Amino acid sequence: MQHESLAGAQDALKLKSRGGVVRVFKAAGYSLAGLRAAFIFEAAFRQLLGLAVALIPLAFWLPVNRVERALMVGVVLLALIVELINSAIEAVVDRISLELHPLSKRAKDLGSAAQMLALLLITSVWSLILFSPA
Image 1 (tube, rainbow, N blue to C red):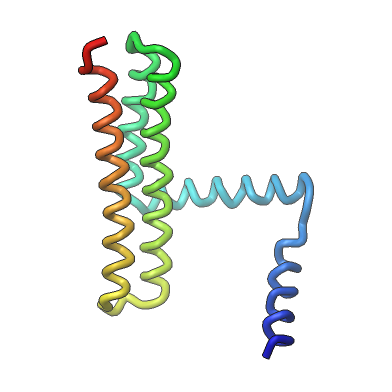
Image 2 (spheres, rainbow, N blue to C red):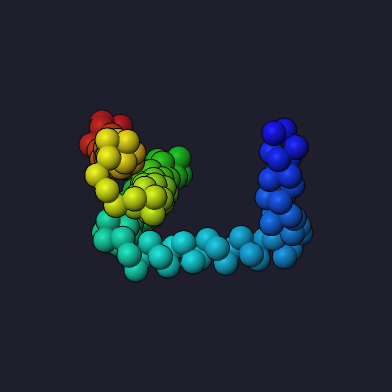
């Protein structure tokens, strides 16, 4: 049993054995493919990207200090990251089965909750910076 597990680990390691610059370029290609897939297949990602296109330049236009600007941009980027992870969870769940199942529902609901908290974080950070007395 332990031998089979070791063999499986070695097979997985062979798939990831590329190192150096080749690995960096391959990883960049996979990342771009993921962004492209999110843009094509995920309406929520496109909507959030539209919000980012509006908010990030606004953060550079507003009279805020560098730390505040970094926070304002960072929370928007974090929400995009959370949406990518949420979409990945949904894709894996759907790949396993489209059948309704309590664990599938829980996984998707948890991803959705993470995204809701990321949006709440955007609202909170932007509100605190813009509307708090100096």
